[in-house]
Length: 338
Image (cartoon, rainbow, N blue to C red; front, side, top):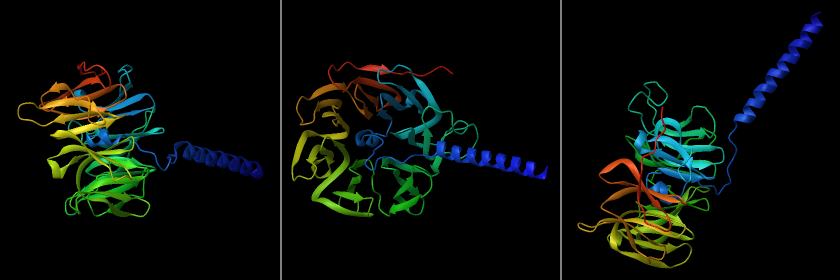
């Protein structure tokens, strides 16, 4: 009898251990390709409000408290994924990564807790998001299997931090304020605030930075199809582009630029001007300039089919315009019913 009970006990124990192991395997976050990125640098520089991946657009819906939404590329099948305000959305594999802002209403998950931080959410699941670092942060960018972000502390200020997509291994990467939005082949290109805004490259594998080009003050770097686009600090923030790994720089605008985005050789930019400010569109070489909307605009977010933006003085809804082709602007105020 005792032998039979022992056999049953061992069998049950084996089943329980197997279930625990299986659950661990199913819940494990797989490694990404080492060169994986989670969003375009242009979208991240504009707040990471939109992210297109696998035919789905994930976005922070300004018309619904900046909650996390998804939809098809044509705007159909609209869904609210998370009732929490988000920004700097990244997508890779089965997961979304983002910065969650403090929910001013009742806490992100129905409790009055401090919820701001860097989070991970599994797609197509009802699981609550996992907090990877509960901290105030700025730009969050996926590079391989790590998230890099501008971490803020009251005493130290802004420094570059990283955390594994699996959770854990949170650490300071650099004492400098390095904007991680522009990731190219596993390296981070950024304006070096410690070296006169010179174009620099941070190498995550070694933890070292080097100046790519001196005497070129850059700001707001956006990478697209072999070029780094930037606002030239030394030339009144006019738009330029630099051919990566070649000593070739081209000036693209004669006007000051407030913000811009680039995707697949199409540029949208906000023209600065007292009387002729406007959202503009042009080709990647600076040709084909056209006015999309007069006035001042922000949060320029590009997807393959549409480019979304906000009026600077009315940021509680989006407008959208085809990224290519017609300049027909429409208002985008979609939400889902409760």
